[in-house]
Image 1 (cartoon, rainbow over the protein chains, first blue to last red):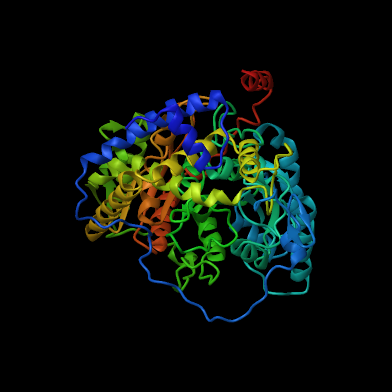
Image 2 (image 1 turned 60 degrees about the vertical axis):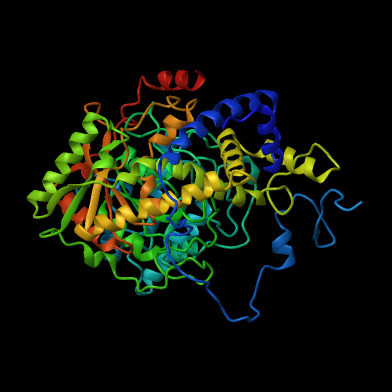
Length: 95
Length: 511
């Protein structure tokens, strides 16, 4: 598999990154060499091996559905770059 | 301890005795630590934020409680360096990223609450690779940290600041995090002790997430006893972290018996050579010497092979970036952190500009890699495949632990490398974690302790790996080895011998 600069641009959009021309070029080269390094995994037959998703095998962890304290609106908003009327303010999302 | 040693040069357990007998005050310990920090940190660069006011209040509280005759934690009044990855209520937390510059958390991480309860004194926030992604601390947005053994070399990473702070006696104990070796590798490069506990032993609540199935918090200390004391503080169940293990926490200092008789120790072949390429000769020699020493102390040593460890690097560099690309989606310029001032009225453009301005090159590279590995059409070939091989790696460890109580090897294939040496070659940088990464993939406890020095006088680390929740076995073997050697007593002097070096250092920075 070889990544083209166009695919790199598409991945950047998915990852919500914006790349300069220079970065796009550099990442295309570097990602290809890293992906090439990954190809060795194909040597291994894993057809009957379950994927490991966590180090500690466990099922769901439940708690009682009881109200408890949380951050106040002031605390929740104290680090926001832009806010209005106790809300986070962002560019228009809905036309 | 000799009377010529400054208080900040002592271990935490030595200080604890002096503080307990009220021969010294927490205030005096803080002053000694602060004066050292002011003397050397401009060149070492261990800290990115100094928290003197917080430290003064904490030291005063500790002294007042002691004066009232209250029973205090053994670590009350001991100066602590914090990797800048923990949420600390009222104290800026940046993860050494421009995107979090100015972020003041409204709450404490679980481990921070524990440190406050035990009366530790917060000296400051220590440097790290941005979002813990790196092996040299050169990816910090706020400058490099230099290795106190040789100022032209890296301290390792990503917890390079905390490790350098301990080595240079700019703190007495420190805390790091370890996703692929970020506690153990810098501990090795800096000649100190570092422990990554079993996954789930320590809560991740309030710790900035990198790769959630791999991240663990742990101590970096001057010796093994201090490490046990710190683990006593950090370990324990926390319902706010659903992956936290609800198991009893022993008193880890009880494990410190200088006795390994009958302990079955396996020297891991794949730690000594990855895909047929051996570790540096001096590193290999020191580690074999350590195995012999454990044998002389009564352990039964043999070589074991865990063949799937030869796939650790590709597995890790698929899984960790995949998890990171998801975890780092939260940095979007909305709830906290940086937002681009470019004034875009399109929200996706705002996200992209914000993240372009806020993230450094390695973080972007890993977001790209992870996004690609999880994207439609590639998910099975990369992420699922890597997760299956992760199972094979874990099974290799399980099999080895049927015949061994403990596995050993080098912590890193080389000693500390030079600043700038690997910054343009991501894979070469990734390979410096080749011995530590499999331990995170399997979720096991791992530890690094000093086991020798290279001909250049740079420290070499011995890695010990235990069964799940086998921290006591690690500490016991580490303590027995440490007590029979004096590697942990050597101190780094590069900073003391720096006259005439300042020019060389600044030239290296300019280059």
